[in-house]
Length: 211
Image 1 (tube, rainbow, N blue to C red):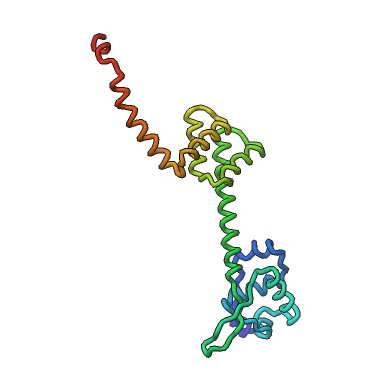
Image 2 (tube, helix red, strand yellow):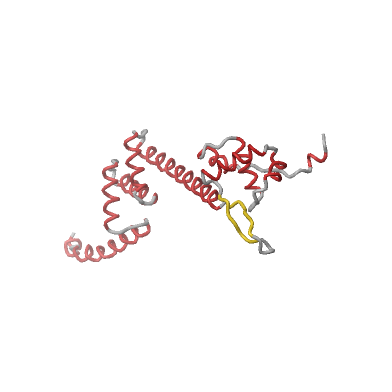
C-alpha cells in the first residue's frame, strides 16, 4: 500500500448530513462536495484543490456546486482576507440551520411517540388514527406535553378515561392561563387552603360531642 495515500487528508461524513442528502435529493457527487465543505470550514471554491481532495472531475464539481447553490444547501459569500483582498468562501449557515431543524423535528417525533405510548398504556388498548390526531392536535396548538400528561393523570384519578374529558380539562386550564403543571398545582393548593377553614367552621362540633 502507498504510505503517502494514508497520509492524505481524511474527509469525514457526519451522520447528521445524511438527512440533508435525503431532504434535498442529493446524489453521491453532491454529498462528497458537501462533506468537503463541511470538513474545511469557510473553504474557498478552488476547483483544483477540491478535485485533488475528493477525486471528482472538474465538470462533476461544477455540476454539484451549482446543485448545492441552487437548492440553497450552501451559500457563496465574500469577505476580506488578511491583506484586505475580497475572497469568496462557502458559507454553511443555512446548512447548520437545516441540521438544527431536522434535529428538533426528530426530537419532537420522539416525544410524540412517547406520549402516544403512555396514553395507550393508561387506556389499556391501541389508539385509532383519529385518537392519534386528537393528541397531536393538542401538541400542535402549543399545549405543553406536561399539561397533556397532567390532564391524562386527572382523567385516570377520576376514572374518566376519555379524550373528550381530557380535552375539557385542557380547555379549562387554557382559559385560566395555566402553562405548566406547577401553575395548576399552585392554584389547586391555594384553593384547598381557602376551603379548609370553611369546612371546619361548618362542622357541628356539638353534635359530635353529644355522640
